[in-house]
Length: 383
Image 1 (spheres, rainbow, N blue to C red):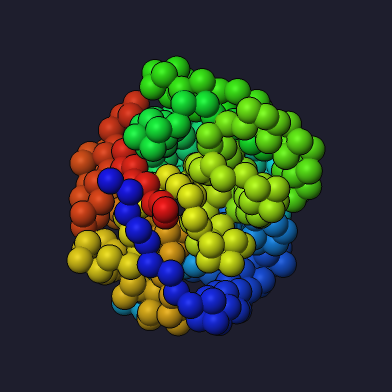
Image 2 (image 1 turned 120 degrees about the vertical axis):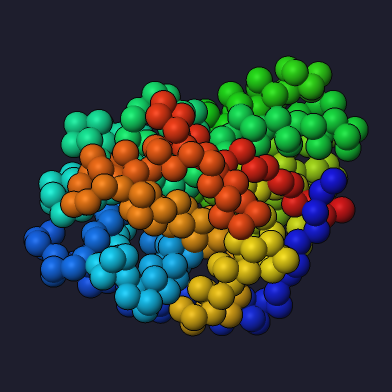
């Protein structure tokens, strides 16, 4: 059953964004400018390249807000065995070329024990050659693309994959009476991965995929896509594989042209940024989710996340920062389970021997040769 999610007031969300940005800039600006030299004694250094600027900035900012809230909470309690958790995060603006440069800098520093919280499929793929060559753990990427499910002993997924999301969305489409589906996909590895996931799911559910159109990464120019996808007879629904900015631009423009069908999206679009970009108008929009409702404090992990966020100065909660918090919890458990002295190798061994881990109503599992993490999928929709 689709779950209706709560909607904070637009005024409250603007305050939350400003607060989020100020906290992140304070946490990230120093490390991003600093030379990658030896950190102070008693630090556990984690590296990241993510979108902190550009059209996908709310994804990187949100994901790292959740992770940094956990780090701050642990550090305030004395750290891990007396060592402070430190994030060295560099901005790639969701552009793989910048990810490549950032990752090279990070892996070259032997004090960086892991790469964490990368945002996106093409950006994560840009990091994988460094992960393999430098044998550094790659944890909690914000993507469900199959490229991260290929055998790699140093990759540790936390979220469920796009294939599982596509299966859930296809089932919801059939329940809603959809038979004919159009696809808007981002013209890169992410878009192709999502489109292929839906092709497979649609075939199994008896859905027919009709017109297909693309949009460029970090672009909101959807006019050409509208011309292709809204040709008559119009599909009963549009499946979107892109970020919140381009998805929102397409939905708004399609509505203006009188399109009355439904819209479906993978989780990567970001529920809260998409809602905000649509000015809270989520009519006939269904989006997959890979974490529970961030406002449901009856779930232990959500209550713990909310507590950490409040202690870090945040007043509003969202699925993206909850995912960052959960991914950081997995990383911390791996650090606790790793043999000392800590190294990239011992951290990888600590992560893959975690076994079944209940974070408080959210289950993950890691074993040698099985680094898939969670299989949680939910759907959020509005009529």
